[in-house]
Image 1 (cartoon, rainbow, N blue to C red):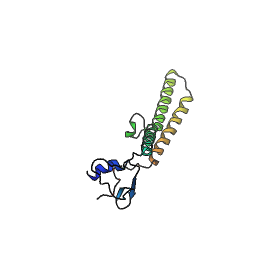
Image 2 (cartoon, rainbow, N blue to C red):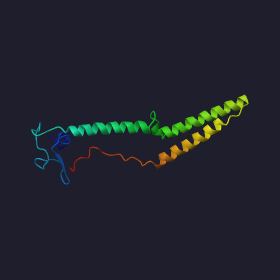
Image 3 (tube, rainbow, N blue to C red):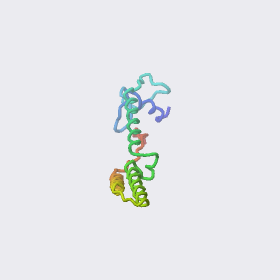
Image 4 (tube, helix red, strand yellow):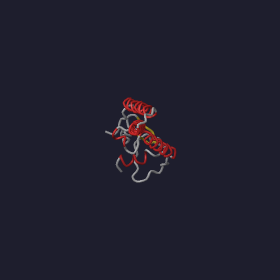
Amino acid sequence: MERSEHLKYCTTCTKREFNKTKGVVCSLTNEWADFNSICKDYKFDVYLEQFEKRREAEKSIRYAEDNLFGLAKFGLTKTILSGVVITIAGLIWLTAGLKVGLIFYYPVALIISGLVILIKGFFTELRKPKRKKTNDNIIDNES
């Protein structure tokens, strides 16, 4: 078996350890795996599986909180979109009031609130640290 195939097993085993010079090794031998098809000492790490499920759930929640209908690709988050919607609602209300001949003060408050929320959303987005792309496949110091 290739090293990459061994790592598929070893990274999910409770007997794994990380050696600074070798990477992922077996805690029983402190060496790389050398089995052919099945490791007789393999024991699945249930806690790792639970950790991965929890991490994926947190990631999907964070994605849902940060993004809205895939508009995040264009820099639109919920805050920015809310600001736009509130501002447009205020403009429509103000325009309708002017056409009827009535001036309402509420639309002006909505427009100002919408713009404040919109600006806050832009600044929040600018201050967010850029997420670095990580390579989850880097688990070994193999050259």
